Length: 158
Image (cartoon, rainbow, N blue to C red):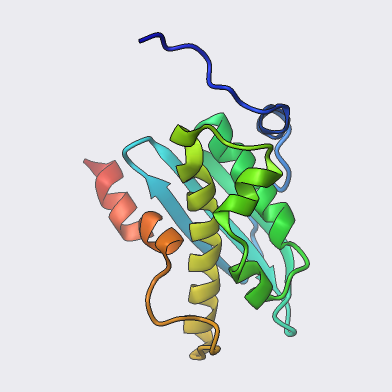
């Protein structure tokens, strides 16, 4: 089996070279970390949420491959300006479509970015002591795929 370059779209390569909204947000309302120790991809998402529960700003930090950086970057763009419920409903398939498609072995990158956003939104409501009706009790598939920060720290410290 040959190990040639992955068939990345031009959009993935562009966002990898010039990611949007890259960097830690010091005044974030909430943040969340997601990672996959199996592949080494790790992302941190930061959301600045206003009183109307609209995401004013979003940014990310990433340690990972081109697909991880590109999907995190496009996810920040997709959720910016959205109400939290609308951001919650963004699917990893939409993220994959927005970057021009992902190789099958890189689907997890889109799943991680959506999982991180959903974890941040869930954290926002936990801090407020509220739970809107659209926010389920059970973690979503994407949230379950994204490790909690403490679990990730344990894996990385070994």
